[in-house]
Image (cartoon, rainbow, N blue to C red; front, top):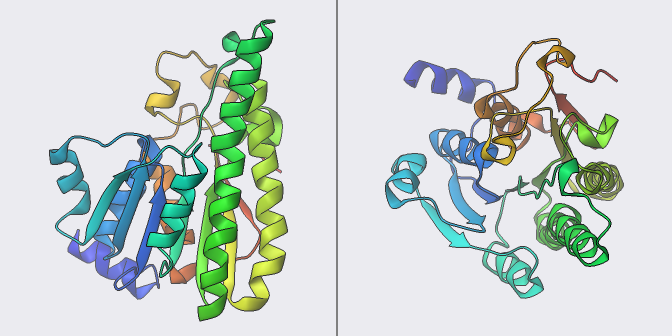
Length: 252
């Protein structure tokens, strides 16, 4: 691991002295936390629930970190994150709600609740946090914002319901919109769009692996490595891109 870490740092994928704010610490987010900690980041991690203490300590690998419970549907929580993290060098948002098509029915109340929750967490929260964080980053003349989209935002996906697919398409558009306004101030904004990934989000759902040229779902660390790169100074000339990491299931 020492040699691998040294090689990463030589390539500029080095987070020593960097404050990384990670919002969402599920399957992919957990691996992002592990990698960023190994690269020397100081981590502020927010999620709807906390992992067990032993897992939190393992992820942090002895570095500087804090974990907070955060419901992203609550505007007061979003303001608190911004207030606590105005010195952030990088913001990474991986959180998402992903109903499958079977959750779609004709009940107006359930549809409205699902639509509202999905767009609140998948679109509104990343937008609000990014816009808030951008102000402090612009003042310093540097920073990186990484929003995790989805292949579903490209082609509808293999497992996602319409609310999720539409929300991720909206997030991709926001990445491009914000990147144009952030780049002149030394701040990069990019997205990472995973395909089907073996996380708790898709547990118990069936998908057709034959539709993925790589023949399998991604492992969380395979997505997290790309996110960590985009969140690092090594990505300094990358602006407004959606990086597709999907085993060849969608090639644009």
